[in-house]
Amino acid sequence: MRLRPLFLMFFLLVAPCLQAAQPSPQEWLDVRGKELLKVLSEKNTKQRFAKTLRLADNVFNSKELSRLALGRFWIEFSDEQKAKYSDIFLKYFVVTYASSPLPLDSVSFKIGKSVPSGKDILVRTTVAWNTEENALQKDMQAEAPQNNGKTAIDLVFALRKTNDGYYIRDFQMEGKSVLLFLRGKMEKEYTSCEYSPDKMIEEMQKKIKTAVANADTMDKMRAQRTKPKTKAIKTQK
Image (cartoon, rainbow, N blue to C red; front, top):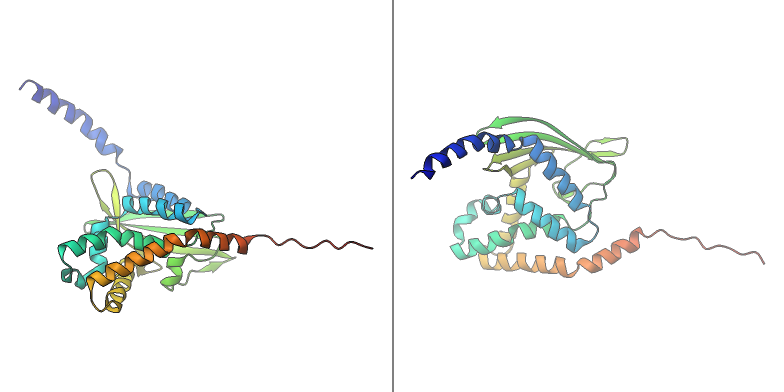
């Protein structure tokens, strides 16, 4: 019984420190954004898959995101099918859109002010680099503004606060919601599998296994394409 007042006193003393230790939305996003750019530039595909998956698992709520991405078809899945689908959702997303390394050059990562929006916190961000578009941007058909050879993407992140930070609930790329984009992709997968949850899950698993199995081959082919050509030296007779 005597320990309870001491525990309460200790909690009251450290609570302000714990609250102050929580990063701001901009600080949290700045760290995670730079981590993402770093892992996406990893040239080894298997390592890029693994690193991106670990980071995605930390910055997204995979269960919520997979459910929202499936939209109205979620109720057609059994509890077991929902669990299997949710388990592979991020893996499927990663092998689809991290299939090639992002060749970064002079990257700038500018984060704007945060604005509350219901339960979410909106943070506008601009990512710019001197290189080609990434796979997700191409697939969403986003037209990035060009300026002196520099490609830029405007992003608006919807962050949801947690006990120790935040997680990304959705983000807009050039005004287009990635969540709605993923929902469209999942609906196409589901309809192409004749509205069969088991068949859809099986097809997603196949694509994941194929991407991992072909990773080394794709790395070798990419290395050959980027290998500098040497000119033959002519000798005078």
